Amino acid sequence: MAKTQLNVRVDEATAEAARARASERGISVNRYIEELVRQDEGESGRAFVHAAADFMKKYEAVFSEEFGGPGGAEPGEGTAR
Image (tube, rainbow, N blue to C red):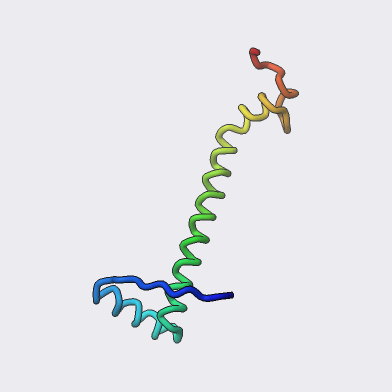
């Protein structure tokens, strides 16, 4: 994968914390930052999937009534049009 240079300004305490954490893990600061970004992307994706699942649980009956499906009416049944 091609690499792109990214310059970031942070305060000294943040820079030291990043250096220390990377060193503790035996990786470069660049690698550490890459892993943090990938982890953040994964968390966002998981949060979306959980929210979508909760939404579907909450409104399953409404969708089933409107569009048919397990335990629901045939599409259009029971709806005023």
